[in-house]
Image (cartoon, rainbow over all chains, first blue to last red; front, side, top):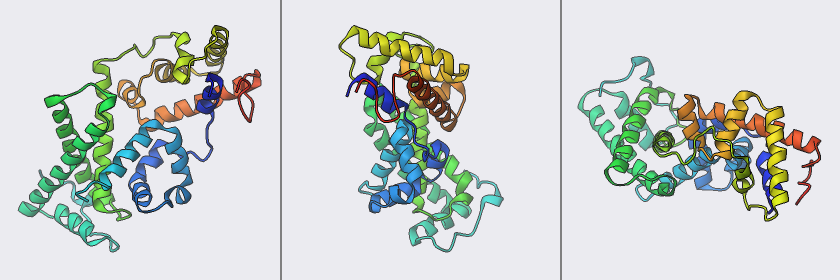
Length: 73
Length: 221
C-alpha cells in the first residue's frame, strides 16, 4: 500500500458510523454479543463501522472483550 | 461510601440474570451489605484496571507504583460513576460487563491525560513533511512525498475550519492520541471524533475534486 492509498483509506468515512457517544453507550451490549458469537456487527452495523474507524473506541472494545473473557468471569 | 441520590435507587429490572440482580439489590441497599458490595466491586474493577493497563502498556511510559496508582484511580472513579448511574442499568448485559465498561473508559481517559506528562511533539507543531510517514509506508520518491504533503496541506488550509484544522494537525501531523486531545481541549471523545470525521470528509472531497483521489481508489495506487 502506498501513501496515497493510505491517505485515501484514512479520509474515507462510512455513513453508517454512529460516532463515539452511541458506540460507548452500547459497548457493553456489543461486547457481550461479540464474545458470544459473530452477530454483533450484523445487529449493530453502525457500531461495527465506528469501531473500524475509531482507534480509541476500538481499543476500549478490545479491553472490554478481554475483561469479560478473563478467567474470573 | 454513602448511597447515591434516592431517585436512582430502583427495583431490579425483571429480566436480569441472577448474578446481576444480586449486584443491583446489594448496591441499591444500605448498611454493611452495601458497603461489602462496593468493596467487592472495587476489587473487581481494580483487577480489570490493572489488566487493561498491562494490556496497553506499549502506549505509555508508566511503571511501578505510578502505574498501580493509575489503576486505583481508575477503579475508584469507575466505582463512583457506577454508583451514580446504577439506576440506568437495564439488564441488557450482565451487570459486571456494564460495570467493566466504566473502568475501561477511566483507564483510557487517564492514559490520555498522562500523555501530556511527556509529549513527543507540541500539539500545534506544523511539519508537513511528516505527513506521508504518518499515514503509512513513507513514499520512496521525494517528488511523491512533496506532492502528497503539498496537496493535503493546501486542502487543509482551504477547506477546514480553524477548529478542524487544529484537531487535524494535532492528531494526524503530530500523533497526539485522541483521548489526550480530549483532555487538553476539555472536550469529549465524541466531539473530537466528529470534528475529525467532518474534516476527513471535506479533505477527501477536495482532493478528489483536484484529481488526487477518485471515488473508487487513489490515483497513485
